[in-house]
Length: 157
View (cartoon, rainbow, N blue to C red):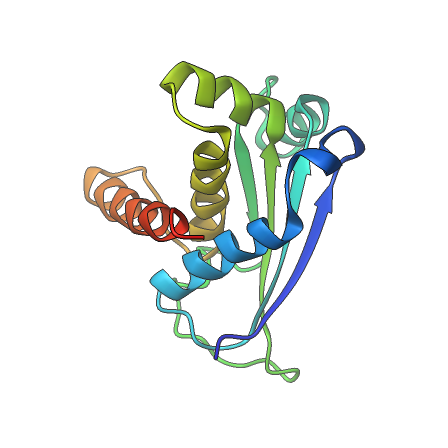
């Protein structure tokens, strides 16, 4: 059984709008579909545009908001090298920050439920922590296929 140490923080305006239990399931499904079986630790933040904009400006030199930012603790993500268990036997992946307002706007633009957009962004961010990327066409195809599998599985929760 996959062991996850997941810290979830939802900024105040969004606390009543999304379930931490649902977010936990989205993260777990992403890890399962990515083939992760060792214990992992990561953080997930559901934030406003202001928080995400500031992080994007500070760490990526992009002066605008975005939908999701992932900060991996290892260069290239956990998929870059074989997992070697640290002394506490937990792989520390990093943190994913999702903009709730941006997710809502994107869901409206795509004409699908907000939950689907949030699930996609959570999966996307977690996959980045694992080393998935979308810079090259083949990488993008693999990442998109993984996201689709996760979204299909989330429909059942």
